[in-house]
Image 1 (tube, rainbow, N blue to C red):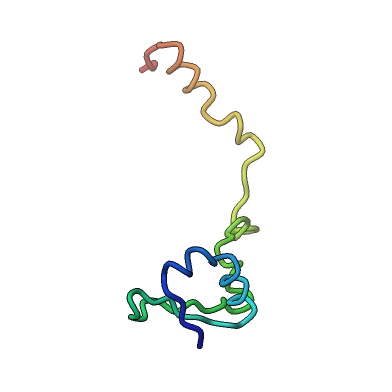
Image 2: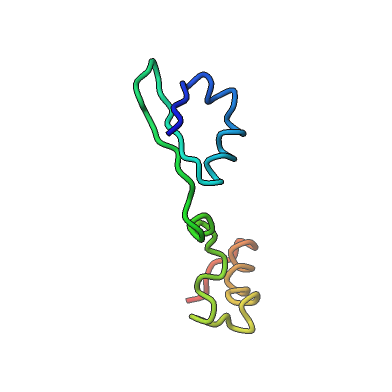
Length: 84
């Protein structure tokens, strides 16, 4: 497995990441001591950060959602006290 010193890794990072993505793992060393191993992500693993729509179909939004609490909000902005 390829071992690259940290200085070279910084200057060649783009190339090294591309190689790792193609399955060529490598080790980054500092002063000759291995520090980290860079390996490619498994298929599908790269997309796990996307959570948009993860609760689709789990709840519904009321049709009047954009009007909910309008009276209370208007009262608060107008500075009127709540009626008791």
